[in-house]
Image 1 (cartoon, rainbow, N blue to C red):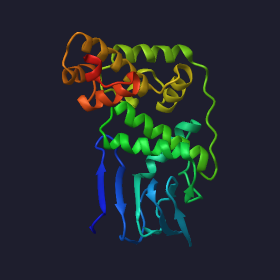
Image 2 (image 1 turned 135 degrees about the vertical axis):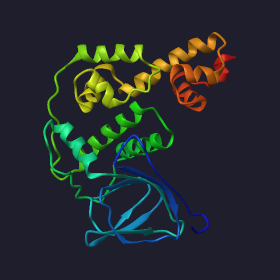
Image 3 (image 1 turned 60 degrees about the horizontal axis):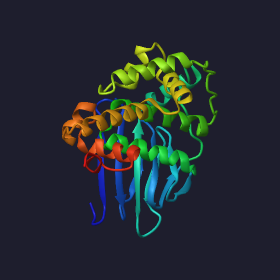
Length: 271
């Protein structure tokens, strides 16, 4: 790899059919190629150009690019500084399942007619989703962000804009899920397991919980973990031990969530 270029490629063992790439390229050029699944990502810096579906396209910083399965495309820098991006390569089955859960019945493979879209809100969601897989976030967070982000992508940009199935105002179930998360806050429960626990689909659970509680389940779980961490820190429990007891992967994960919610680091809070 040329000087100034870097790339990290990985798979998450818990999500079958998903590959991820974070890279910065300057002189590297992708020859015409295709993927069995999708190539979805965001341009973090610079500008990429690529030939796709009989035309050349420009993806500037902040844009989202969407390449459908089996489509020949290229990729290279549009500026001498190169480009930096994050890419997800999901299998067709992952987006098809997301579409199925949106409409509540079997659905065709989603097709995205526009290869470059400008949607700052969704671009931010994709960036956070990608980061959550890189930072070993909780299973609940990774699965929730994956399903929710792909659902938004399909509803907004798939060619037929599938309409979401009407969902009942199920406040009672949302409250029971909330109580379950409070009782099992330290467990690394997945979205699929949580949905099975309450006999609903993962998308139904996500949508209903967000509407009734005001936060997605993984964010609520993090809130409870931080509350419990504050109690332990006040009792003098070491930060690393506190992180383990409340369910965070390590001290750095506790620190990141703690600062977002409390505004200061656990060390400063502990005094």
